[in-house]
Length: 207
Image (cartoon, rainbow, N blue to C red):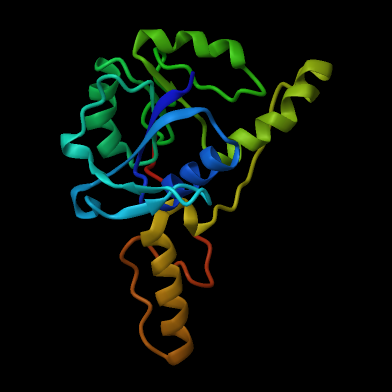
């Protein structure tokens, strides 16, 4: 028996990749829903390379009742509004944003590292996952820690603009084009020019 799965933010870069991976891995879905903001309602997305087309549903009006899990690939603001609604409807939320990563009642899970922690999802019906660079790093660190007990890790990461979604990628493209033709490279998505640059800012600053 398969699952009923919702991908929230299905039209974004991460959401589309989630759909691709679900199809590629042949995840047992009896039904899958592509959900996004109202501006994408009615658009169609291909489910991996299966040829199956999914019509995008409006997040504002979507009823999560009866769905088994929802993969959230939207920003923290939208997650803050809709993840609790999905969880309250009995749908397990797996959140890709930063919103719940420091919440003591929400397990922060990397399956290869701390699979047992997933049992804590029952407190809020929500599971969080770490930042992309953290997830892959701890997979490598886990066996080292088991063998030698790591006490401290100093990390520097250089994040791609794709982590900021389509707006970030579009800004990089437009600024790169503008610089080559001599037009101003005015930042709108990022705080500073991102083309041919590195800026010490990712997501929102926390104390």
